[in-house]
Image 1 (cartoon, helix red, strand yellow):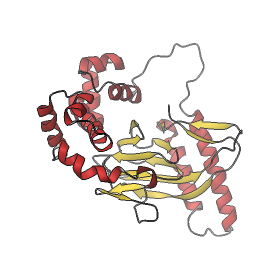
Image 2 (tube, rainbow, N blue to C red; image 1 turned 180 degrees about the horizontal axis):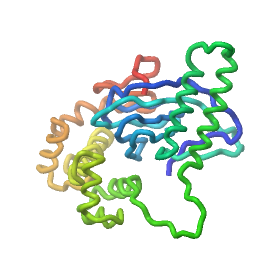
Image 3 (tube, rainbow, N blue to C red; image 1 turned 180 degrees about the vertical axis):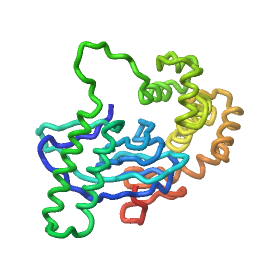
Length: 296
């Protein structure tokens, strides 16, 4: 599993910190930053980090590795606390792996309090504190916070047998890996170890749609990536995402995107030729280094 790696002993260097609104709540808008990005969310949504996708709730935290391509999706976007920082392990030195997603739970107030304090310390002047003192305290607090993410949510030792729990990330990863196959609510429920009725309810609560609706959008998202990054035919793209009938694939693609697969390929392929050199894409135009863009 992809993780964020930090040094075991050094202090992070904070690039920026604060509370930012999510201005582009669709996966078509993506970011790429040269720093690690720590987010604490104040709204429900999903985040896609490279090839992985996670569901998050208020109080959850993501730690995104530097250089990753990531984006957000939310029906009712709000604001999130964000800290961009550098903490690269030295060659040969011990490193610490952080999870991409940490469910805040009872720890959410602590996470939020520390991030707010770090943001204030990195902001304007504070009476009685020299600038270097504030920055040093912010760096120590951030290091402690990052290390707490490593241990947060670990199972406690004891004699009681662990009861398998529903895990969105495991289920979503399995669905994404099997998009080419027919998938039913019964199949997914069996995989998640819940009843079909329970899973259907969870999908409505978390995604405001059915499992079928979710699978359609995921298949179209994958198809969009194949259309713009490969020379596969329309039929081959549809078959690769589990929609083998070319006419039906065309109809479903139009339903989700408003354009045909051929038109989407023509309009977007040129924007993906310099992926390694860009930071973000907005409204169909890639934004390169040095160009103005909203804080993610």
